[in-house]
Amino acid sequence: MIILGLSMYPKEINVVKKDWRTVSVRFGLCYPSFYRVGMSCLAVHLLYEILNSRGDVACERIFLEPDSSLLSVESRQPLSKFDVLGFSLQYELDYVNLARMLLNSGIPPMASERGDGHPILIAGGPAVTANPEPIAPIVDAVVIGEVEPIIDDLISAFQCGGRERVLEELADIKGVYVPKFSKPVRRVWASSLDEAPHAISQVIPQVSADSPFSPIFGRAFLLEVTRGCRWGCRFCLEGYNYLPMRERSIEVIEGILSEGLRRTFTDKVVVIGSAAFDHSRFENLCELIVSSGLNISVPSMRASALTERLAALLVKGGQKTITFAPETGSDHLRRVVCKKLSTEEILDAAKIALNCGFKHVKLYFMIGLPGESLDDVESIVGLAKRIADLGFSARKSVRLTVSPFIPKAHTPFQWFGLESLDSLRSKVKLLRKLAARDPRIELRFMRIREAVIQAFLSTSGREAAPIIVRVAELGGSLAAWRRAEKELGVSIEEVALASKELDRPLPWDHIDVGVTRDFLLKRYCSAKDVADVR
Ligand code: SF4
Image (cartoon, rainbow, N blue to C red; front, side, top):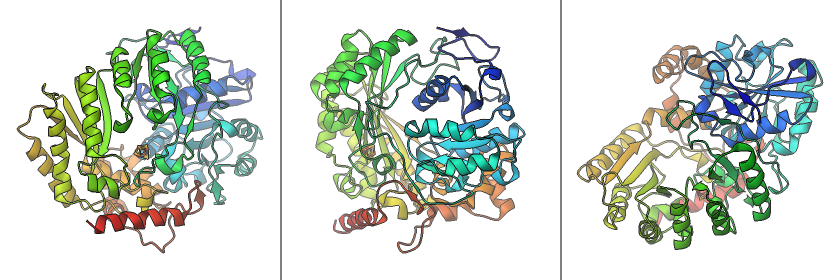
């Protein structure tokens, strides 16, 4: 165990600090948000461990902190000193922060302005896997899919020396998109999770829960049990861009847990996987964790998968809130979006959760879904009230998070635009009014302006890059977006709201994530059929 204490960052265990003179690749692992957010991301832990396990690579982490110091955690080096900068991009809104990190480090944000003296920039993550085009003029390469199967090839390419040569080598690796060459790319993925590496020596900050450096889940071991999701909800990026669904065997998980907990000294396990509840032995898995005296956190449950035994295990493991994602209050609209879940199943699950001792329910909803009526919107609060009536009667015990539907590339709903802002605002108002006098219900909304920006970034092409850079130059705030729009004469709202014509090419057509356009189109058309035959 190595404990490191630096002036700004807290003491950590499992941190790795290497002598740069002994390695051939200095890799800056950049997370375009705060330390506490980045350290809650399993991809950061995984890359850090894999890269540092190689004798010829030194990997150090860099976060975007409010003070903008932009020095690596390990040896306080600026971004410009690294050979390679790898950006983990979880959300579209991170793109501006990526550009801010470059600008604040004196690195030209456009790839065309960088030369041999600058680091190579490579990015990866869910948003850029689906549509890398908005940042294509900014980065040098993008990993389309999952990095584990190609990590050694990437390092070999970085070792070639000379920017042009490195880019040519990168372009030959399966799943790597080099925007400069614009060649079609197929997604790469780990065929077996049992054979894929898992972060064991996760870096754990030695801080209390109220520290600004405490990860979102606290001092916990992040355990990935599944990847991808088989349910195919028509709006969901995860449901189409990470197929097939894969799971780790319980035997492999046991090994990861016993070694991981030994090395991290944690007593809490966060179960990771967008469809973790679909693991064929999910109850056994939770039993394994809880019976070892550990706390457990399952960030989201499919309502139909919650059994009494499972709920009891989660409560025993210290989980206080159960989270479901009904998406909408009405069965009809759930059919339109292909969320195969009924209101009765949600109520049954809430009943089980209540009987087993949960005191709070968290529910994720969307508004502005294709085919949504005002009745559908009202049914959101209707469902929340029915859940509260089961016995979740304390103040704010039913917590709703409501976000506008945002179209995502490579999903059946990629052709839809964001709903008009007036309509979204009136739906927000309606929900507030309906829930106003019920103290049991807490309502939280994603800001509509943020949804506009996200929709713009998720469905744009390369023309978005100068706007991203200008917004970054102006500080990245919502006001910066308005100013950049004015200066550059563009309306991001227009782009975000526009639905896409079915016979027109899309900016991400050259990215093959493994589902065909025809398949998505069929699912788009069947959604329209369901919506129309109401
Ligand atoms: S919304 Fe959830 S259940 Fe549906 S496809 Fe996405 S991850 Fe799977």
